[in-house]
Length: 342
Image 1: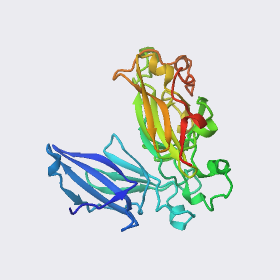
Image 2: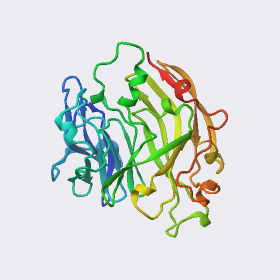
Image 3: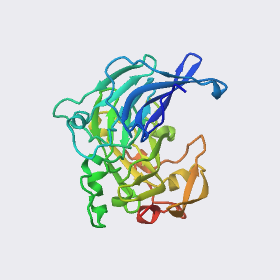
Image 4: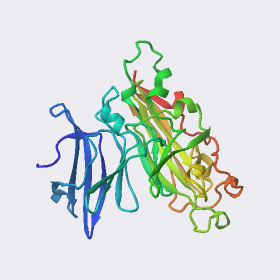
C-alpha cells in the first residue's frame, strides 16, 4: 500500500546509510491499467523483519533520466548507481531516443542526486540498447548485449528473420566500456574462438552477468597487485525471433596496462570450461524444462578462492586472453543450445 505499484523491466540496488539499509528502484513500465514508463525513484526500508518494510518515494536532486523500461544498471564501488540504455519501448527512432544515445545517468545513492555524462560531439558512443547487462570491471562499466526495438521496423513476413538480428541486437563481440575516471566511451573487440557458432551465440539481450575477479600468480601481477577479471554471463533471449538461451559464457579481460584507454581493450569470450576446472570447480548438471521444450545445461559452482594457473597468455603479455573451448559434456550453445518458442 502506498508503494510504486505494479511495474516491470526495472532494476534495484542496495543503499546503506549508517546501520540502515534500503532497496532502491528506478523507473520501469506499468501494467495494462497504467501502460506507461516511469522515471521515479522509490526506496523500501529493510529491517530484520522484512514484513516491516515501508515504501517511500524519493525526491531526487538534479535532472534525472527520461522514463525508461529495460535499461541496464549497476552499482559501483564509489557509491553510485550507473544507468544506461532503456527507452519507452518504441519501434521507431525518435528525437528523444537519439538525444539519449551515449548518455550515462548516475545516481549518487547517499544524496539521491542525479548527474549525467553526455558524450562530446564527434566522439564515439554506443547505440541506445535495451535489456543490456551492465557490470563494473577495472574502473569502468561494461555494457553487454541488448536489443534495439527502434530498429525493428516491420517484422519480415518470411521466416528468415535471423538475417536481420545483427541490426536488432548488439553483439557481445563488440562490447562498450564507459571509463569512470575519464567519463569516456571506448569499444572493445572481443574474440570468440572458444564459442561455438559465435555469429548466432553472441547476439542476445535480457542476460544476467556478474564480474568475477581472478587471482593470478604473484609473478604475473602488475605492481598494484590487481589481477585480471572475468565476466560470467548466463542465458538471454532473442525473443523477436523466439530464441532463448540456457548457456554460461565467460568473458576474459586483460591485465590493466599503462597507456591510453583505447589501447587496453583486449578480451575474449569462451566457455568457463578448463580455466574454472583448473582451480577445482565443481560441475553440476541441471535439467531444464519448460513450456518451450527441455534441455540440459551445465552450471559451474566456483570456489570462493580462485587461484593457480590462469593462462600463459598473461605471462607473455597478450592483450586478449583466449579461452579454451567448451569442456566435454558442457552445455550446448548456438542453434543447439537455445530453446525455441515458435
